[in-house]
Length: 523
Image 1 (cartoon, rainbow, N blue to C red):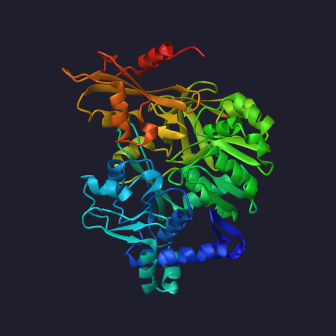
Image 2 (cartoon, helix red, strand yellow):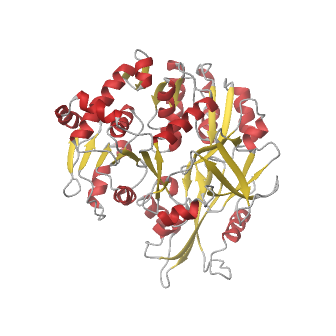
Image 3 (cartoon, rainbow, N blue to C red):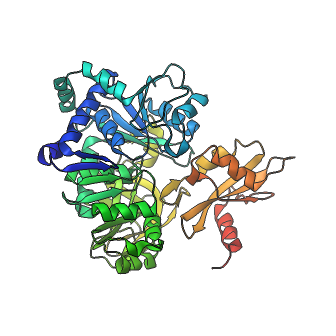
């Protein structure tokens, strides 16, 4: 609440026609806290949010955290079964959601899914949500106005007392991230970790109190949440949420609102540069660009510097289990920004290690390990997975292959977990493979990422049909679109008689990648 006291008359959030000052935001958060408390939310509980970027998301999130709960963001692209798993695993008692975003009925999808949700007692429809036709059995559904009205039974003094009782060591959020097992795992972080790291991030990005930050990165992701609206609130900047990325709309907002900070995946900047009407917009206010999450072409950075007004262009590397781990510096050249992930953030140690955990010589390839205050408390209810990820010396094993030069700059060269990135979203093949194996005609499947000029990578599924069955690639893609988030859906499906298997019985994905590359048309 420090920014509320310090920046009371300054606009905190501009969401379409809604323009809210820091003082007004503080009042809304207290009302949200009272409503959460009236709904029975207490210290140690979990509140999930499944909704697009917007003022309502921020108010609900802060109300939950001020009431002592940990925030559980849900990917807006997920389907019912994916969201139900997360809600069940986190034991969320309240879900705040918005029905109708991109034509999606979040509540209806949960009602239709067979996953039991014994802990979920209430679904709250955020402002702007469409009405609900059906809901999961035993779950109360109410709109935000009704939810806030219930909160009047809790005094402002009680809400402020609850807020004052939230400890730095309490969990601030549980962000779910997939792994090699194919099931998402909940990463537990505390308030102290989150606030310290994203104050550091503010210094890294050069975020200033008078900045106007257009947030196109989704709030369910660390980039849009912690390095987005939370960083803005910590600095006292003004937040402009974008629910759906549309180039013309973004350019119009930049011009009309004099936006200064615009982070995003490389595809965001590529789309801006390629827009045919870009020159008709006044983009002179833009000052800071922060990218990452995918390989960045050197030509893109050079073109951004030549054709866009950014005075600072930064890149970085991070993961849910440790936040932003490395970052470039404002005076780095285009090649350094594009081909490296920068060097360690303040307060963190990174090493490149061999299979035994011993540091390799500079320039050699190994696994990137990180140690420091921002490493997660652990995976939710999964001590074995936590022990496998964080060694006895406190180093988090990221699963990413990297090199480090003499300056300490890191280059990510591969992914031990076979993860690939589609338009800024992490895709974990094991999770997609598990879903595809529920298709009755698929006997075996291996998913890899293959290069794509626009998206960075896209998924490619190599499918062995079930004996006696035929598989149509187009049908598999359509089937997948109904059951998983769009960015996870394989864009290419190849039908094969068998998969390459090594002596240990594992699919040799390197062979599949080589074959995929050889089949691609030469540019």
